[in-house]
Image (cartoon, rainbow, N blue to C red; front, side, top):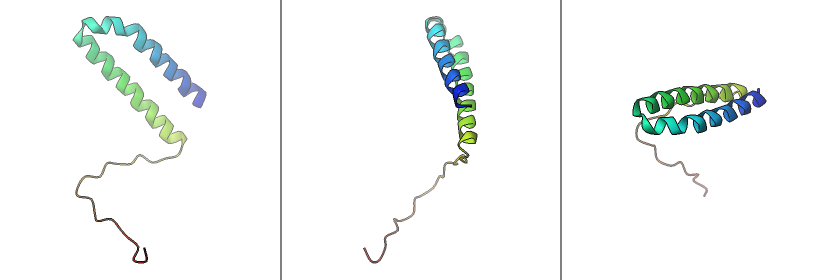
Length: 73
């Protein structure tokens, strides 16, 4: 699976390099390419999280609590 993900990363690099010249002239095309690359990147991230058996951490909003300090320190 890791070999497959590494191959996918190399393919993404080739795509970015080959499309870069065309994207410079078209803002519309740049938006589509960016959205597609984001989708692929998100998919790869999910695959890595599943492979490493990590749960996705949700961002917590709000005020942080006071630091906890040991009374003996």
